[in-house]
Image (cartoon, rainbow, N blue to C red; front, side):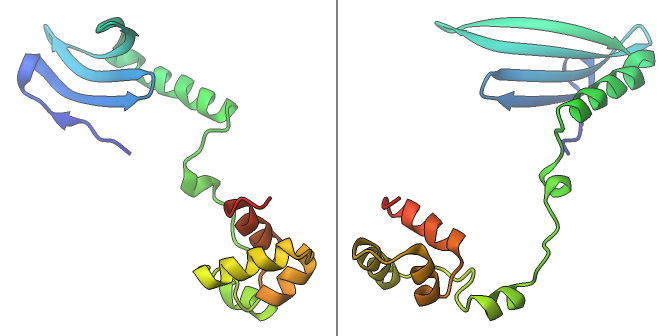
Length: 149
């Protein structure tokens, strides 16, 4: 998670910049006559070196409400971090290798060439899984990568 970093320029208390394909977001914690607020600026490139900037100001007393609204949007769209979204494995590598001896091992060039040859000779995916000791998904994925599916 990004953190705010102190910046002594422009009377900012802290600032943070987030860049994406559509533009930049600037988060600036500011202080003005003993009043603190968050200024969020969105800057989008509209072409020919021109930018459109929009700003919102959130008073310190509104910040927790703003956070709650953002969290509701995140929850609604089911946006979670990859770590939270990652399904728990229901098997171990050893268990997979008992069933498919080459499970999760890298493919070698010779194996790729042999796979292509056997596939072009008409071997079924099921037959290829037995020959290469890999599951259906691994065989199909490799054939796709090699441009054969």
